[in-house]
Structures are given as C-alpha cells and as structure tokens.
Image (cartoon, rainbow, N blue to C red; front, side):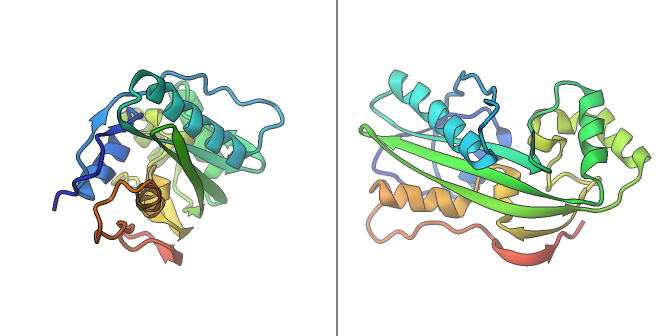
Length: 213
C-alpha cells in the first residue's frame, strides 16, 4: 500500500537501509543526502550527538528545499562511554567487532523532520548483545565490505554473519530508522492523511528478543 503524504518527502540520507525501511512502509520519497560535519565534541553525550546530527542534516537539506518535508536520522553505537561510528578502514572495523563481541552495547537513533519551518524530533535507544563469534568469522565479514558503511561496523540484519544474539527494544532502530518514531513525527506534522495510522515497526520493542539467523 502506498501512503500519500500531504507534502513531498525528502530523505536526507544516503543509507540504503533507511530508504528500504521507508519504501517497505509504503512511503514515496526522493533522496538528498546532507553534507554535514559529523565530528563529535568532547563533552557531547551519545543522545545529544545523534540528535544534533539528525537536526543538522535535516536543516541542511531544508535550506535548499524549503518547499518539501525533510526527514533525517543519525545512528550512534555506544560502548563504555565511547562512540562507535562508521569504521574508516577494514582494520578499524575488525577492531570494533572484536571489542563488541560477547558484550552489550546501546544503539541510539535520532530522527528529525522539518516542514514549513517547524522541526519535530525524537530519539530511540535499543540495548544489543553480541554473540561470541570467532575471529575468523569477523575477518570474513570485514572482507565482504559489509561493515564499512555502518555505525559500529555491523548490521543486525546482515547474514550469514548475524552478530547479534539478542536485543531489548526496537529492531528497526538498530537497522537505522525506527519506523515507530518516524510515523509519530509524520503524524505530529500533519503529513499523514486523515484516518491513516502511523506505521509501527514489525515486531519491535520486544524485551530480550532473540535474533534468528
């Protein structure tokens, strides 16, 4: 089913996963990645970092396209107070994966929607626990190139590596775009047609959900 919004929607992201989530929910949109500085300040917490970057991305595209609704998001992986962004090289990706192995971390995604000079935003957190995969498995995954464009150097949906043992919270948040929050923002902005409910993440918010390969 296609959902017709009250305005043209632009996704300010080059992430194929975010685009896939939106398409799967029935939304029609165009893509205009935002070019912003994603360097974190020394005193910025993970929620503040994600929220600030999502807002920057949305505002950057909105300045160029004031006639459309702009949706932006930013995902941060936090472990022991450190932020794990996208790995800069295969060696860094392997280092991140080994550091996460067998441990729990937090995935934080902020979403920002701008429309007619108004901004609506929110943040979703999911606790994720990795399985104890072997170094050989990690090496094979890194060699595939799959982790190089992902925060924390992994995708919960990536097969056959499947690094996640369990999660507590929203699954699509870990993929990169919590559909539940996105739908709420579209509703709050008055962009969803009357009588159309905000979409929900399939099977989201399940405490201790085991991830099946």
